[in-house]
Image (tube, rainbow, N blue to C red; front, side):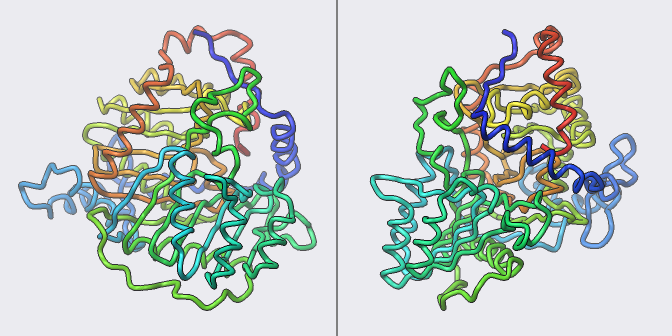
Length: 468
């Protein structure tokens, strides 16, 4: 079956490419942080180590960490990943949480609206795309204004670029009702706070300091489209079904999401927020351990990618991942290929349709090395796949806003939840099995037999992939 890529809305694609072209001179001197400098060590053929709080840990030091496990837990995947992740950073691994994985808008929007309806103290929202979404006959603005009238504090951060199609009247109405609203990096050059390529790609909702949401799902009307919408014949992604993932968290880790929100608020010099109990006591709610990682451009230690590749390189059985934009830098691609060659069950779920088709072609250009190494690649055809998630050995999982591409490291504010626990991993594996069931698996023979036209599209896409 030959490769085919859906065309997206022309205006959106042109806007994205024009932005890339306009900001290319500003980004030309930026480089992906040299992860190998942080992971380099005496690992022999792997040449990787685990990053400690101050200096890289060598293979010997990593072995010493694993040796601290009791004999019965020496090969326990959860204990193994717990020890290795603890060595990565001083950023807290917070225990005592419960998580619910929400696999699309039909699950996420009602969960979010339900949490906001029950708010008694405050609602904090930080989203790349902030639109007046509707669920069960109620618009987001109606819900928030109703809560403001009840005395609930509402604070909003929206990205100027991602929300550029949202009418100003929405934000004006929220402000008039008493909400505090911050525009991240306004497009007006006189008010811009950073490079025009710097975007707040995060998706965060915190209600009463007790319930948190994060992941890849925006407050965008595309998430109202049901699974039956599929992908229209004309490839219009505005009317397609979007397969994306969010996570609902209860427990002490919610305070970490709240800290990320207020970090952005301070960074954008937001106004004083209304008094509220933003950090209430949070009792234990479950058995999952969570680390919230907030990334910003210029991070000297790209902790999310270090955490992900540490888990990948330490896998004993399986590595399943999904990325809405799968354009990993060369080093990460090498690590994925190395893991597959080691006999690990490595499966990668990627889109065949995207709002920027060039990203699909750029991904396809790099399939060869992974397929030759033994990785299995699945392209989802009846949805716009936008998820960013992974699960490893049935114990380590992540869901967030970071794609496997350079943009997530170089240009975006991102937030990701690393979750250690079997319950979350089981939910993740169920979702990925469903994705794979409705996907087409790409074989090496099929990839090698692709047409000249497809190869030319890949070549053109790779010319832009640095800024995608």
